[in-house]
Image (cartoon, rainbow, N blue to C red; front, side):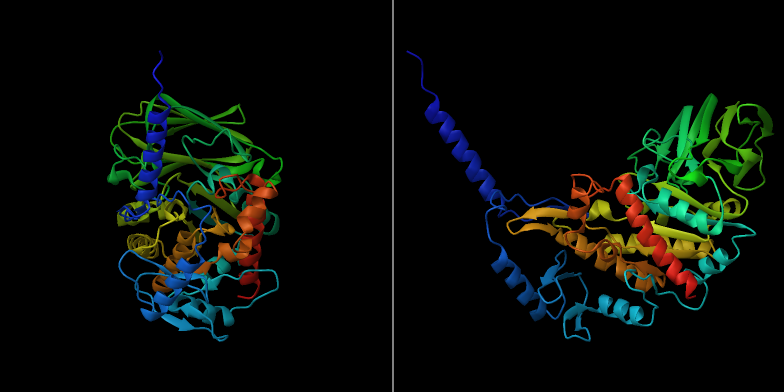
Length: 484
């Protein structure tokens, strides 16, 4: 007679359910900025309104001050109260944080236009970090290159968002080419502005747990060792972004080393130029010019020399570099030596640095952003101290949603992160742009998913969505430029 295992199966299932229910009462596990999502088996069926009400009451009772590692939600403002913040009220009597009060006050003296989320310039009169330098550079774009670096994580990789932003700026101010390219890219097949192929390189990324040396750490977050004959080829693509089809110059960037290293540039498959890669500066670069639709750089006798990237640039007009680094929080920016930052600035000066890091820490229970604020502040100060004449724009986190008992809602961690980013912009005296507001706030990423403008993870955007967000940012930049 066969043994009946039904009772054993039922017992195991019940035990598993009880364990999962019990895990809800465990405290959240936090490691640095990272917070493990709480196990909540009944999240989709329980009504949390009473819990939210208790949270909002305790926020006000604590005078805006929250216990370490916690962020409460005030029902009047629907914004989490960042650790160390104080509550105040806006002109309508709504309870808000001091950070939002400062942002709102600045917004009142900023020129606004219907349908546009304005850039709030929180900079001072020293000329370091505020938007004035960038707007002045744009006014001179007919006679010189104006460079923009967009630093971010997977939200912008594959030239998403930056491709359309670049095209819009080049249409108005002139310019061509796709800007800076690392020697290799994990999104080379995904990018629609340039066809990039390569071989023979050993990449090192700032997000690697090992093998990334601080000596060569730089603003791009990448450097490369080369094998004999290592090569990289870039070919412009003109559809749908016409100004990406060609460029007027291409550079090849390297960190100066000992010994003799040579490079060859082949333009449009025919014109060949040879270079001895020597430089008296920490970072050197070789340059070819002309009507360049395709360029191939090849290295011979590389030895131990370290390489950074290549570019497809213009001699006048706007250049937009997509410097994406998947899974990064931007921590490497605060660790770049002053000499490396200054050297990079000498060979590739940026008139505007746009910082879009943060999405990787905006989890469900992320609430304490002290380490993030400190690191981002240090990064901004590093840029301001070593790159004079460079404007800095902090872009707030985009909408990221989760399913709750009452439908799709913005993750609480996202709102806390945006508040943290505002605080950094205020304390660092740089500009801030609220992407969350520009998108439409809560529910905006859900609508984008429905329209094919975002992926089903309710976090990352598609090329189509990138084009739409790029238009929002372009309009904000142009409003600031026109009313400077």
